[in-house]
Image 1 (cartoon, one colour):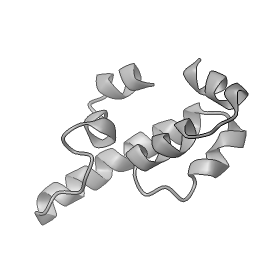
Image 2 (cartoon, rainbow, N blue to C red):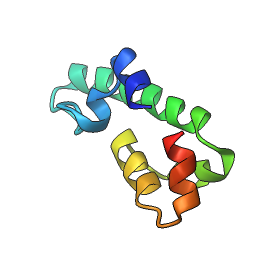
Image 3 (cartoon, rainbow, N blue to C red):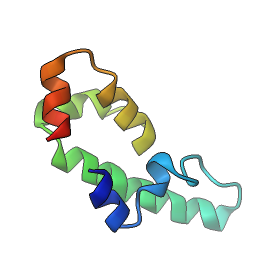
Length: 81
């Protein structure tokens, strides 16, 4: 997942320098577009059962934190594949 997001210039909104919203209106608009693309990627590539756990996440960083904080080893295995 990380490699895919890096390849599409979206990893910065997950774990990089753009993980929090910027101050300026123009930069905020561009940030929201990147966040939307990253969230779409996450929601369409993970198992349908897992999507319900990130549905209320505001950012991809929060979504991944929710997914990987699960205690069930089977869930974590599915995420790492």
